[in-house]
Length: 258
Image (cartoon, rainbow, N blue to C red; front, top):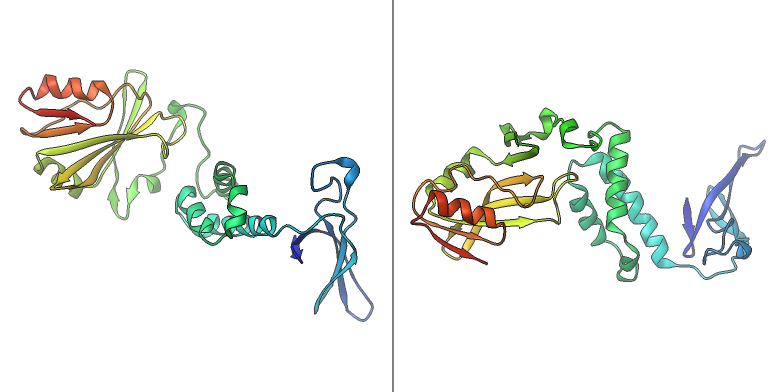
């Protein structure tokens, strides 16, 4: 695909003359359907490219769309980044959007682009496919690590519910030494098949730092073993069961809900 004067073209054919000159023939991406989706409004736009440029040989029946060109350029960049980077799709898309013109941003569908990145990586065997259920979920060793340290600290079951705990040794040591914890659940970045990402923070004066992340299959259940090592405070944004666990195991704890 190429773009010229804010129009996009699909490659139709290429020919090389006896003199070794190659001509590539292009036609508008709307040659089967019009830009508005109407079959009866096919665009006749065509172009031919040489080694030193491109020339329109048949005019379009619609105006050029700079926003559409920007979007296609972004999609190409995403495909490249998907192969070269191990960053999460959300991070790759976020960086790419910053380089897109404002008028093109309303056309961006993050969910579709995220799926395209995951599909591309799966095709190239850069990451495993999404399992159909949690019993089929096998986490490769490279996805359990953070640098050289084991990041997946716990992978187990509570009845029919699977729980994953992620943290570093340093974060766990810091969490156990701080009496004031914060708890928050998020749904925006939760992986498929899980309901919620449950995060434990430590409070340092007016700031908080995340120390433990827990993937929960059921948003009504949370990890309740030894929620406090010493007297202190837990601030929770949801999950009544978390508060109940604190009451049961640390009656002297000050608990507030936000």
